[in-house]
Each structure stands twice: as C-alpha cells, then as structure tokens.
Length: 125
Image (cartoon, rainbow, N blue to C red; front, side, top):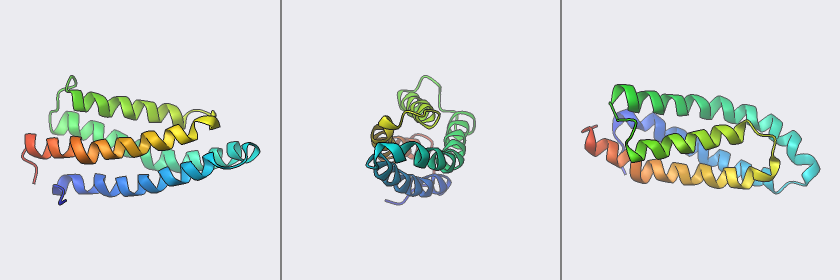
C-alpha cells in the first residue's frame, strides 16, 4: 500500500519496530538470569528509537493535522504509547513477551487503521 508522503518516514520506523519486537521475543526466551542484563542494554536502544517516534506522531497529529484529543483512534494511539513507555521504564523482565505483542499490535493498528483514516480525513497525499 502506498502511504502518504508525510507518513512514509513513520511507516519506515514501524519496520524497525517490528525488528525490535522480534528482539524482545528473543530476550523473553533467555534464561532468567540473563534477561535483566540483556534488557538493560536493549532498553536504551529502544528508548532512543521509539520515544522520538512517539513524540513525533503525537505532536504532528495533534498540532499539525489538528486531530482532536478526544478522537478514539488518537486516544488508542496515546494509550498504546503510554503503555509502551511504561514497559521501557520497567525492570520487570517477565513482561517482555507482552511488550513485544503490544508493539506488534500497535504497529498493525497504526498501519491498518490510524494512518488510512488520517490519509482520508486530512486528504494527505
């Protein structure tokens, strides 16, 4: 599917996030004694990639496009972002598989629901 030009960089970031999701799955499968150390190292990589992406989406959609804060799709995006921020701030390595699942589901939501709606609603090309 061809994505609106303005959304293409965000979609490319989603590909990298899917790679991160696979890495989270691999971390979740490690022996318990290795998980925390590996997670501590990987968390920095994730934070450096995902947090700016979240900020860019939130800022662009709200302030540039004018999506209203009470829009149900925008609210879901914000809730997902908040949940993933909490995962990145946690040392609870037993939640790595759930984080991986959340990240994949979030990308699927944005690519299949949010972005098509934005393209249609705001006539993005």
